[in-house]
Length: 449
Image (tube, rainbow, N blue to C red; front, side, top):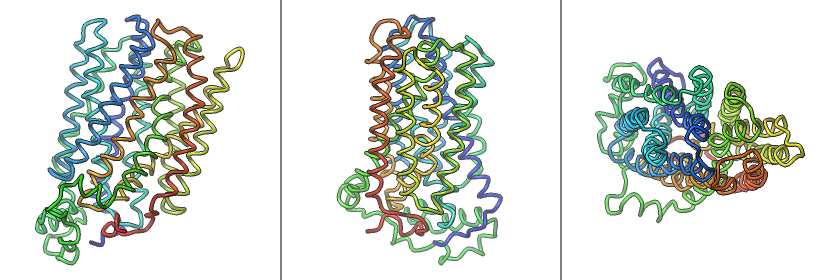
């Protein structure tokens, strides 16, 4: 299947839907960081309790990426995406009714919400990739993840507006449910339909994407079904182990390395600034507005450079700069007296590059697998790597201790943790050197060899 390089209004609509859905879902995901910064004092939570709540979202992401990644290859990209949106919206709304002090129930609900967020992130990548041309696939698919920092920015704005009222913040996190109306207008991926032998449905999906009559789309445009249909004698996971275990290993380890430090900043950063450095709620919100802006710029730059310099080079450069940022942040926490300005400068660098790498990182991960197992392969690999979203927050929580958070306990934990995060960013950059470069490769040929 050769997809046209000029975007139509319908293709732009699909990309916009996926971008907005990811922004809205991660707005919900990032809200918990702001909420916990408030609840740590209102509910008198210790470092371990805060860590468990923050890690719960990470655990949900792991489960969601693996489960919904597989679902995308069985029930379709579109249906899986719709269910992810519904899942997170309903369970976020349920959080609003929690009684005071029920942090265990809050942690459970965040697991379910995280499953929806992790699933949507994985499902949306092949959904867009299978509607656009190889020449611009890196950038256009990368947009699905590139604008995620706007969710963090909107969370910062919401916190500044809501102040200490955490229930209002959580209620706003249910708004993504409105996107289900828009999604109902978009067809299933033509590549998924082909993998199920539905060439007629694939023709209709391409006609919608190209905005031409169905009679203008030929079987040559659609492509050969047999070239992408999965081997019916073996399951998807067995096929991944038999044919793509090297790719699974690279993407899983690389994802873990990049996620560990990024998610710790996104989840613990508000508490570090609030409890560690004594910065007020409005000040924390302003810092995270800046972080979201540089993160967005980094993701857009990564997505743009990936189609010009190659995916591997971009990830190597961004990984090492992410490591540098973590070392600067660690220095700011360890200095005497602790220097908030140095710490903030460090996390700005780390987010611009270490988290900015996600403008292409998941796209590149999905490109390591063929269509028939793309959702399953990326979901499994990213799901394993996303265990860092559990380990990172828990690690910081354990270092802070079980008592109520104090400036000394928070900052001592940060100094140790960020040196470790720097080492993982650097290691992740090296790991991706072993992946297959996919710049300019047609989608039919991805995952071969």
